[in-house]
Length: 167
Image (cartoon, rainbow, N blue to C red; front, top):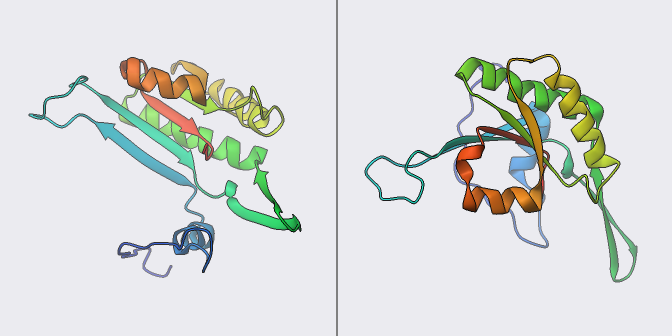
């Protein structure tokens, strides 16, 4: 924290048991809320989409990363998906500021608000409230299921995608 630099080697978390994720602990402790993943076609490598260039911005500190789960009764486990207006607004602002700074053309919110009406609905409302502050950047949204299909069929329609943790 003092030097604002970290070196981290490969880390793994036991699946289904064992200790909690060191990565999640670092994200929470250091408030590393924006997971930025650029996706580009590699020059000289044959590709169906040689001009592919998009960025995924994912909220990294809440949703299922809150890690809140418990046994309700033996054989039944409940995991809580936490979505807040504060974090949804913050990640949306990050995505739009990134788009503005990097000369990107559009920001797409990816969600599951068709099923998760309150939690992803709050995320989507927050996204569109932020979008109003960036009238020069077109904003739209896609349900995650459709988005996955569109990424395979027509990825050029995307530029910056912002989302909570959609599993």
